[in-house]
Amino acid sequence: MIGAIVTLIFNMVLAIVKFIGRLAKKLLFATGLIVPVAVALIFALLFGLNVIEYSPISLAFVGVLCGGSFLYVIYRSIKKRLGKLPQRSAKILAEVQPRVFRVKQNPKYIMYEYPDKVELYEETKRGRKYIRTDKRRF
Image 1: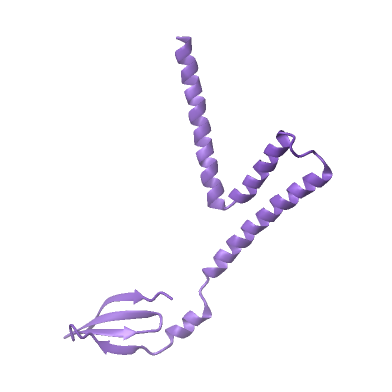
Image 2 (image 1 turned 90 degrees about the horizontal axis):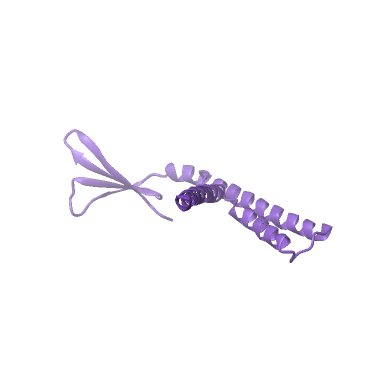
């Protein structure tokens, strides 16, 4: 009876620790702070095992490495967000007049070819009917 209770308590504690670990992992990967935390944990382990002594120089070294990795993560996230901003060239490309073609397989279809996309229309008695747009990859 006591063995079953101890096993139950151990399994509950293990489940809680696993849940907290998964949550921390997801949070670190989502925020991009996995590198600074990993560097800090490695140095904490090295300090705990007395591989590195507690001295002002070693603490400054750890601070510089952790701070540098944190600044790198911030730089990388800013660079990623700046890359997603629309560029001025996209506006210029939108003002370009398209080349117009009839589709060889079916003359009812008309293609408008822009530098960044191709639009397909079907010519009907009521006018042109939009079919789809295909974006070009650069």
